[in-house]
Length: 65
Image (cartoon, rainbow, N blue to C red; front, side, top):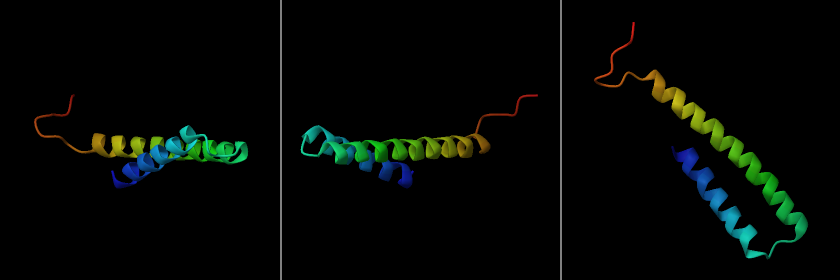
């Protein structure tokens, strides 16, 4: 979860920078590309966490036949 929290913080900071209007067009375009990469990383991390959770046996849940 720490990696996911870090990515969320970075995306929030990037959004604040983009909203400020203080970035040049080129800097904003680069930041948007960085955001897309971070969003991809966040998606991959969510998938990993979901697979990890699904692999664990949760109390009160039995395997279906």
